Length: 65
Image 1 (cartoon, rainbow, N blue to C red):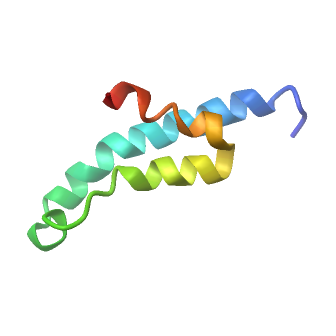
Image 2 (image 1 turned 90 degrees about the vertical axis):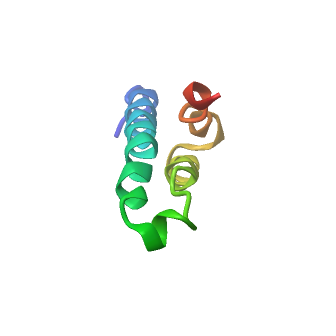
């Protein structure tokens, strides 16, 4: 991967993690045993921080506030 494509790659990964952060609670909420004790929307944000770096990990949090 060239240096010029790296910001685009980070943006795409951050957008995928944002979509996963919105969809994942719906899947785990349908299972009563797991849905009452697990809040999985923070997991994609942490994963995005590890994959893309700190500033890109803020992107999934912006629409939630």
